[in-house]
Length: 267
Length: 293
Ligand SMILES: Nc1ncnc2c1ncn2[C@@H]1O[C@H](COP(=O)(O)OP(=O)(O)OP(=O)(O)O)[C@@H](O)[C@H]1O
Ligand SMILES: [Mg+2]
View 1 (cartoon, each protein chain N blue to C red):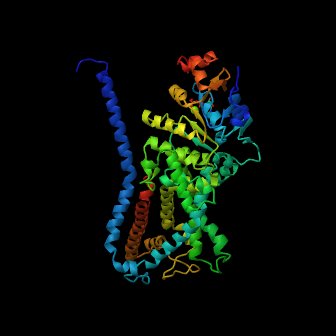
View 2: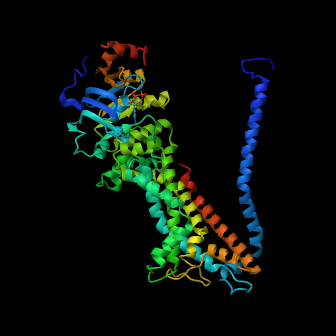
View 3: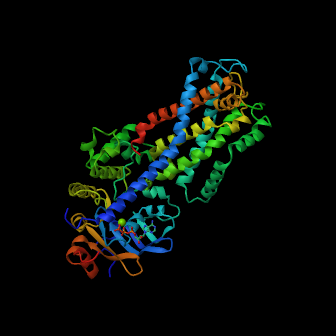
């Protein structure tokens, strides 16, 4: 069983995960995952429900620590920095890694503009016009500018679900993160909105490294350059079964469990 | 109708409907029992109070005992001042404590604070009066004054703090966790997003809690007996004994003459209207924000 991407060497790996296990209290949800995620590519994480995909993704920006009793062993390095180093501030890690959730979650007391500007506020050097420029740039990058430029002061709730999700993406890239982590970003959206997000991911990967958890096999095969397959054994701990270029995983899977999953026989 | 897969035996249906009607009747009855005293009090106050109300009642201070006429101007002012002091003290303390309890639930200190708040809420208000009497009135702690409007305000603050803590905590718990996650994932520090994202989305609820506290403060009598004492004259100085509507209702209601009863009813009516007015105004002001909740 190979757990390393054959192609990716150190220089172009944005995230290097080494023997990572994630625990909730005594329960081990993810076991011994080692993985190199190449920079400026889309890496999909697929696998049946409950195999620790979300937990794994959330351990890449330390969001899983929100749950009580959550901890990890092993290391995660983003651009050469160990994010679990005690000297590292958790808010800095989260600021420099973007996360998109399954349910679009715009900040509902804030306007569309403020939703994008909130992350910028943390960088005190920025003046008003600079912030306005950055907000516009981010909304353009998120392919949302034309739809909202006339209603920047309206509540973010005035947008459709797909627009809200793109707003969340704009909000996330405002702080220029090293990686974008997406946890089933399209599962609450209709096919058209889903396609828009996929096109957007294709644009964004020129500048960003994207890791996306998805249950949608077509989405993985369409959008991802690399695919990682998670599975769990009888100990209910999720682990990595197979990892490699998407095309290989989908056309010529090495592991029989991967094959049954992507052809819809299990999961 | 012929028998289909949808048909339920008519006996079963009749029994279900009977139970449903019976339960509905029970809830309606319970509601009626609950609101009857309220409607009765409001109606009685309206009938008895409005009769004696006139402009003089608002503009005059109480007349000497036994004399006709006189009003409750000093009581209205006193109630407003002391409730204001109570809010000035209790809102920061109570709301911040509520925020702490809701957002730092796992903190060991939170358990202690929550328990202490519950105990405080259960203390009889006269005991709060004695407490403030002992620490402020007796040692003449406030600018050498004994009984004073300030002491009255402090006593009211102690009474409404637990109300504010509890309502704030409960309202904040209703704020969905996804909002906190959204902000946390952006790298906004917890204290920051608590104050800029979580609390604003619960503004209308917190304001309602403050209004509840204000209503409670305006209606309290016992703790004022030992702190503000009451005053027959117009006074806005915080280091002097101060009148309050609730105290005036108490004094007039037990007064052995007909004129007293008249004043008590009218004063009670004014007090309730005052609370109602504040409630409606706040609701109106916060209505715009509450749409988002
Ligand atoms: N906050 C938590 N506290 C305790 N256990 C948790 C918590 N979150 C997840 N788990 C457990 O960890 C395991 C992995 O959950 P996770 O959400 O990572 O799976 P997933 O692969 O994302 O599933 P899905 O595809 O359904 O989203 C599950 O057994 C789950 O019960
Ligand atoms: Mg998941």
